Length: 151
Image 1 (tube, rainbow, N blue to C red):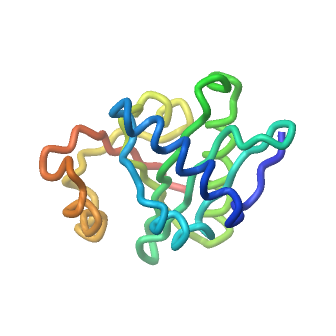
Image 2 (tube, rainbow, N blue to C red):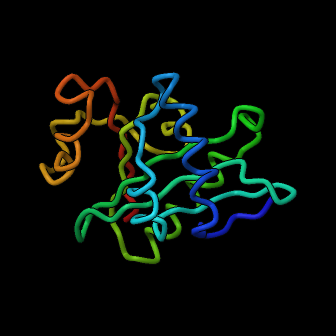
């Protein structure tokens, strides 16, 4: 297993994985343009040269970052790859001196196992919702909010 920062050449595989889960209603779709623009936020896991998991750490403000677009290829689920990426992102957040990290997710129980706790979405700063207004699920979002304090 190799965890590394994503490269431009990973965008098609990242898009394919996101699109798979978006088609199942388990993840929000993302345009390739958004992936190219945010490629520096992404980390991936490779197994035998194959991209099997990915996600991004997005900084929103001086005290808050978001783990987003976290996904593991279906045939690699329950092997610890999702947790490994979350730990990578939390370590990256600590190195940035980020005190809190949150996620909006359809799988809050996974994040709770990683040390996060559930929080009401309304308790998150409005800055979090800037991108939500462009989402096809807005304002009837069924994602749950989870957060972890790193201090």
